Image 1 (cartoon, each protein chain N blue to C red):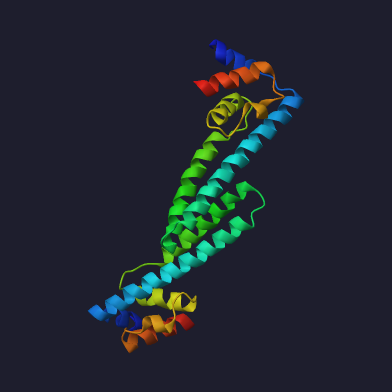
Image 2 (cartoon, rainbow over the protein chains, first blue to last red):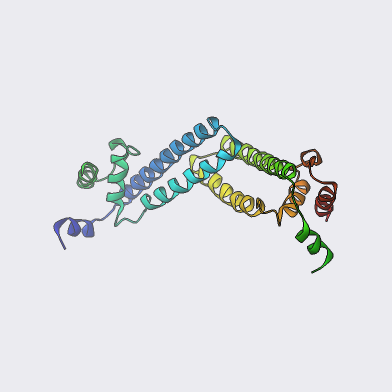
Length: 113
Length: 113
């Protein structure tokens, strides 16, 4: 077990942190869904024929696979999830306020990898 | 082989009929896709949270399975397909003008079953 794995294995989450984490997770999810919804609206608005709706379906299928893969709320992987969401712009550092400084650093390091 | 199967087995399609059939088929498909698109627009407009976009995806997945099943352009099944589309309102009798009277009757009988 290397030092990073050891760190993750030792992570504990206080009740306050769990609340912060849940809120950040749900916020990122809604933001990403809102962006997907906007893309869908644009696709529909710019469709040339009605059967373009199946391009919308293909797009949503692809996005759903991506989103399902990212949003994993197990505490054992949550710092990696937050790192990814921070990197991709679905979370900001402000959303993480309430987590221990050590966790925030770990997330920021992951986001910059 | 019963009389209906015999009739279907003997069906021939003139070039004019093939053009009429293709146009009717495509018209029905676009109409049904347009209706699905309208439903999607309404679902998005009435969504309470952004993650409702996945309800739209579920809806489109279900509709796509239905549509893929119906729209089969093999001449051997086309009268049944048109009967279904006439019954469901995606085709009108006007769309069938150009087909032989015998075929139109067969389609109408199928639609009323």
